[in-house]
Length: 399
Image 1: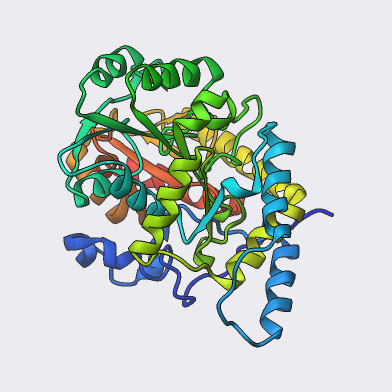
Image 2: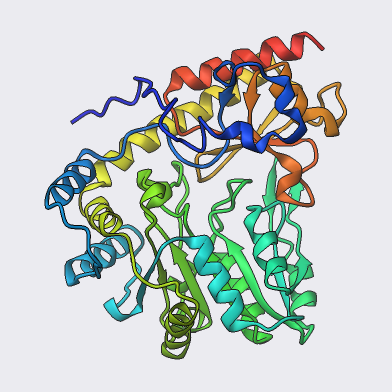
């Protein structure tokens, strides 16, 4: 059945962080807007599409039970995840390897605390998801930057530099963003293999954030890092979630997949020690039903997102050539290179807000390599994307 992905669902006045609460993130630029509804917010990574009907109906049915006491996962929950990973990626996982948690970011905090010590070094690959910086610093670990290489409109890992950095005995962990947020790379098998071999050779633990793994565009294939080999599986912890895929982030459900029994024991013990145990009743229901019945919904959504990417690419190329879209291979996040605009990079966020009336993610928040870029969320009806592009065109003409 065809899903309606064209109608805009009104999210104003729904306590949406993306729509209602974005002014809290403006800082001193808040004075630039008189009415928050004059601005089109296309920033934080949740979709403007309703979740799959099967998920909505299952959550309604569970809610009608009327009792929301403490809940634990069931065998059917595990089997839904196992079947999803097997059918889509050929990744065989066992029920005992699945460790439910309330979110990927809490899981990353937990992992950093348990598997490293203050003063240890952790490698990240900027420009990258901003919480990675916060997680490392908040836990008093030292950041090591392994910046991606940007050339010819795309990005690659600097694996030669990583090999040098990994030789430092103080480097204990690397956090891999796969697919990569914000640049949209879906790492190839050869890239992941060399990456993993470097880490194995130097006893560096790999932690993968694979929350965007289901969101891959045509012509590309996502490979779970731990699915490449048993050696990689036993030297890694994989953070997954249905939240980005099925637009259920507010239900606070994620799954860390840990093949190594020792690591799994340590992860679960630390979760108990810091009080990060227990999972959302409705989140469990939504997760299981999304993985069971959400395949066709996701296929149609990704088709719409692909069309949105193509529209942005063509529009900017024809009408605003000073802004280039970095062609994504995955995610629904457009990484826009605005360095050819006749404005200073430090004024880019203000320009987008004040002149284009758009609130986007600021490039510098993603670390080195982010200056002169913005991130735009394209998981929305095409009419919203078209509105955004015409706003940008008008704003650029005014410069």
